[in-house]
Image (cartoon, rainbow, N blue to C red; front, side, top):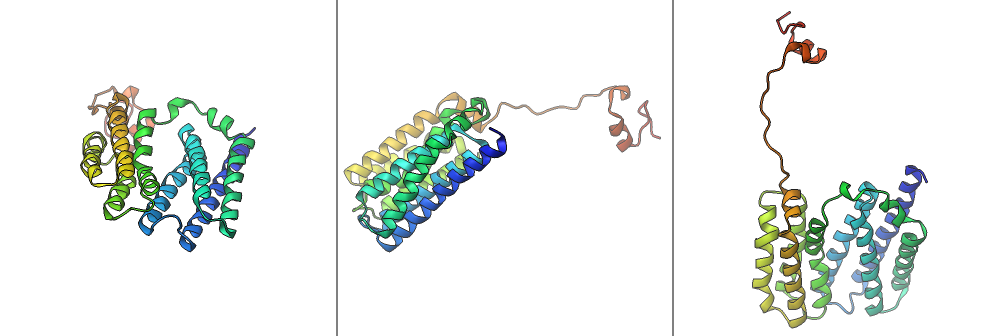
Length: 254
């Protein structure tokens, strides 16, 4: 199968996932049951961030983590459909969810992403850190469906923000993933109800353990050294370099 055909198949699966996201979002807007407004917001953000990341990861880099995230997305959507009231939008969401699952199986997406060498992507521990952060909003929203308040909203929304900071390797990204974010979660967890508290603690521990892996440090701070100027004979310099500098073959001004 050619790369062009592979890209078309991935595009079809990506469009199905986006349509599923849109139908679920509209369904939550029309009838958020059984979630409270804050939990609905957290679930919505928690679906869109990993969902879009999965689509981009499959289409741009054909990443294995994106394929696995797509399956996690399908499973979460099925869980939401089980607890949601049945209606016209529910049927549409079910259609898109099952079609997405069928596309992941029947269109050979697994074989497409497996043709990509594992070395072309980020290390597995770094993926765990990013996904643990980005999925926190969804996890807290599901765990605190009836009790989510400002604390749960604040804690849940820090997840996607921390994931963005870590993925972009902004200043302090490694310290954020190893110490700051996990510690902040542990401080906030005791003030929550039991179920969201357990979810937040698990997210904190998982992120910290993965972030302290040596390959995560390398992915955030590549092992590069500053170069230095080295003099070379003019005879070894490319002709275009000498021409741009206005020098002859001996390195003298023309």
